[in-house]
Image (tube, rainbow, N blue to C red; front, side):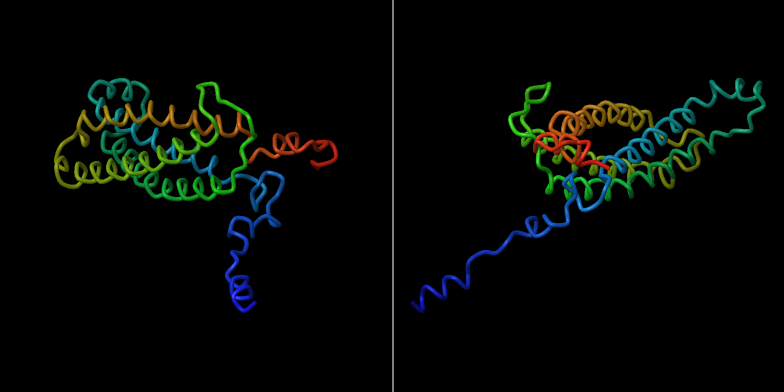
Length: 212
């Protein structure tokens, strides 16, 4: 009898995720709008602007006559300043983007029996999207350090502040981020992750009654 009572004392309680269940809304989150998708677009926008303005700065000798004709008071240094500060902001924001993504992935309840357009199931898609997010974060951090060395050490006295290889890596990242974003779009669009309407329809609810 004593052993039985002792064993009952060590029965596992609810997991931390289960303890959150009463606080979750119809989208499976403790707040009305997912944070990760919004931060993702902030990350993408900052990164694209950073690379685009560095490309404009690198090609400035070919563009300056156009700027003069249009009477635009732009400088090569100005383009590179925009590129540097946007990449720096992107690096900081992306930590929060990835953190929010993992938190919301822990609370994800994909629709059962669904296969994506590229033949992946929900768990495979979440796994690749999660791992890919960490890899992209590491690449952005590495590019920020690389960009900083170019700005403050290697090319600080040169007109073109960035190496051509850096710009090529940035353009390659456009493709990688696009492919990675497709996985995230499939989680929402095909698996209904944190999409209130999809989750309610899967549960057999009447949207006219369930949604305000």
